[in-house]
Structure formats: structure tokens, C-alpha cells
Length: 265
Ligand SMILES: Nc1ncnc2c1ncn2[C@@H]1O[C@H](COP(=O)(O)OP(=O)(O)OP(=O)(O)O)[C@@H](O)[C@H]1O
Image 1 (cartoon, rainbow, N blue to C red):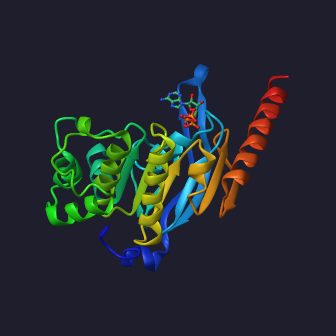
Image 2: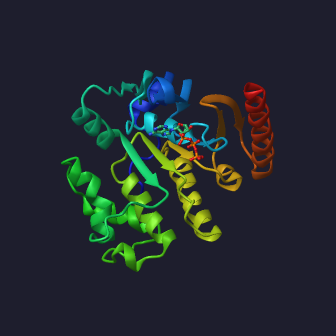
Image 3: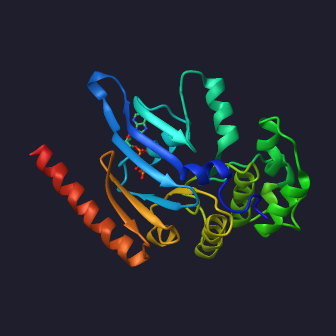
């Protein structure tokens, strides 16, 4: 019901939904230069669910923004399902995003004056694609909102609003869905529902999902966790449990603290 069953043919052939080659992102000029990403390379297979974790300021959001074409790397290259995301021309980048990428944000980012159905089909309209309301209805039913199509966002709970955002992200059948702290504004139960939906979109429908989170329980819904520290990938953990993630994060925070102290000493 999310649309295609399993990865799209091109992804299957290539097996790779997202690739970053040596991505660096440097903010600011000489005297206040911040290296937010310091040469990140990675390859994520189609149909995988990856959580990105790391201490505050480690570059998680920057990684997501660069990978999703919302920000431009200072150096390096990004490929989505084999197609390079080039940053020369803003209009081309927007078109690329609309065709290939879905987003879920912490604060839902729904338009307050549009109802559930109209929010969901908005990306199709923006991309000037055929608006298939039957399909949108099916996706909304799948996320448990089949009976809320005419409700405005303000008439929904936080968890329901995030489910609309997920439906909106999935309706275009993107190659990758990027989620930035998707459960950060939700209570435990709604968070679990939202994570379950993301997981199901991967396991049942072959969607590829990359999610930034601070929460070890949220990360445990993913197939694998990538750990960032000071703009670099410093670890990978398959089949994560919440306990194992929490332990790794504690060690990582201690290690970063130690290195920063040494660097300042
Ligand atoms: N627009 C910007 N201008 C200058 N520096 C920035 C900008 N965006 C991010 N940074 C810096 O880049 C580094 C990485 O930031 P980023 O937001 O990616 O980290 P994060 O791991 O997502 O942090 P958090 O978990 O606190 O959200 C930080 O030092 C941050 O201050």
C-alpha cells in the first residue's frame, strides 16, 4: 500500500540507495571556521533503515542536510540511487529532491491551512506529477489516518501529524526518506507507532530510510546505526538493541570529551 513492493528496479540493479564520497562541510570564514563534516564516505543499500547517532554538534544534521540536497557539501559527492546530486543550480537541486527524496522533520512541517489529504498530495503537486488521490488515500489508510482525510493539522495529535508527514514523504515513492529526529516531539507511545511505520515501510515495501536520532530506543528500530563524532564516522553497529546503543553512546561521549580536553590542553 505504500506503493511499490520492494526496491525500484534501478535500486535493485545498483543495490545502493545512497552514497557519499569524501563529503566535507565547512561553515564560516577563516577566523570562525567550523568543520561540521570532515570527509564522510558511506554506502547504504536500497531497502535499509539506518540510524545516525552521535554527540551534540557531531554533524548529524549537517550529514542529513548534505545527503538530502538541502545543503551543499564544501567538498565531496553525493549520489542518490546512482544519480549525482549536484549543487550548481538551485532549481535543478529542488527538482532532484522532489523526484527522489522524502523528508520527515521533528516538527512535522505540515501546512496549517491544508487538510490531511491536501498536505499528503502537496509534494506531487509541487513536482507537477499526477495527483493520484486513491493512492494517497491508501497510504493514509496504511498510516492509520483513513478516517481523518478532511481534518486540519491543528485537529490532530502530534503522533497523528507525524503520521501525515510520513504519508506525505512516502506518497512520491522516493528513493530515500530522510528523517531528522522524527520522534523528538512525541510521547513514547506515538513515537513507537511512528518508528513502527518507518520500519514497516522498509521491511515490507523496500523503502530506504535514514534517520537522525538522539534516542537509543528509536535507533533500535533501525537495521544499523552509524556513529558520528567531530564530523567523522567513527562506528557502525548492525542489529542494534537500545541497551547496546546507549552503552556505545556513553563511551563515545566520554571519548569525545577526552579528546577535546587533550586538544585544549
Ligand atoms: N549554519 C551553520 N553555520 C555555522 N556552523 C554551523 C551551522 N550549522 C551547523 N554548524 C556547526 O556544525 C557542527 C555540526 O552541527 P550539526 O547541527 O550538524 O550537529 P548535530 O550532531 O546535528 O547536533 P545536535 O545533536 O545538537 O542537533 C556544530 O559545531 C555546529 O555548530
